[in-house]
Length: 100
Image (cartoon, rainbow, N blue to C red):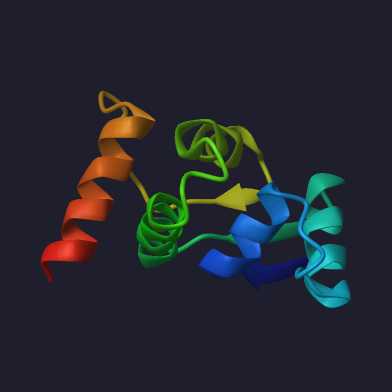
């Protein structure tokens, strides 16, 4: 099974169905959607995605996108505290990103 590491732009473009997502990245996400590949999403990518989303006027519902990634068996996210909501995780990531 193929494995890929996503970056923030690719995830944003995937969730917004943007034409900016290239054919190889599109194929990787489609393969993952079919369970034929794994997409790794590093914590810094989640922070960058959240920050870019806020900066550009919220083109995606970050909490919903996080829930989709979290529930997809083909997405591998960093471990988080299960008692925290996805919005809390996103806020913590954003704060870490902007105060570093």
